[in-house]
Image (tube, rainbow, N blue to C red):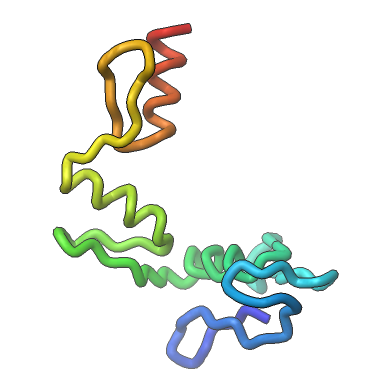
Length: 110
C-alpha cells in the first residue's frame, strides 16, 4: 500500500504482489486517499501522491528546477544541454521534445 510517512514522503509499505518499481498489484488497486484516482501500478500511485503533497525529489544540476517525475527532469535538462534528439524527417526542424515535434509535423506537413 502506498502511504505518506511521518516525514511527509510517499512510501510503498508492501502488500503489493509482484516485484520492483511499477509492479502490478494482483486484483488490489491503490486508491488515493485524497481524490478518486486509483491505479494497479505502485509507481504510478507514488507519482500521483507527490502531486498532493508537493514532493519534488528530482533536482536539476544546472538550475533551481525540481519536479516530481524523473522523466520530466530528463526532458528539462535538455534545455540546458541544447540537445535536440527528435528530428523532423521532412525538413531540418529538430526538438528536445517528442510532443513538440508531433505538433510541428501536424502544423507544417499535414
